[in-house]
Length: 183
Image (tube, rainbow, N blue to C red):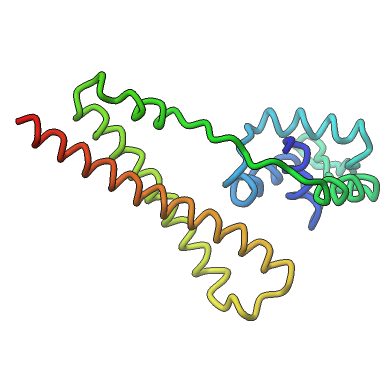
């Protein structure tokens, strides 16, 4: 997936400024597609040049003019076409797994501390996802169709983070056992 598709996914429901898009992106698509504000603005310029989006300039007093971006009909068609195309599963690239793969080369406590740090990060993200689920999806059987698709995406994030925490627990326990066996 290109950043362009992630931005269109964020813009397709409602037009917004680049600044607002950056904030919105971080709280939705940004959970599974990272981009800096600079990357977002650069991509918006490209999308506008390709006629996927259009910008309405809104004059402001005592501030620079604001650009309100919206998806064009052409951009909507391109996005829908992209959705219908098959995609390959994403290859896993994980520094931690490379470190664990050859973790016998360093003292166990170094890897254990790194795993504990990752576990805390995954627990934090899992907590955020659970809060979102509780706040917006507590009545999942009564969701509008478009919200059911958002909820499916959230459920994937919940599963990924739950599994990541469980795997970290398992790896930390194995390292503890290896340390005991070495004593």
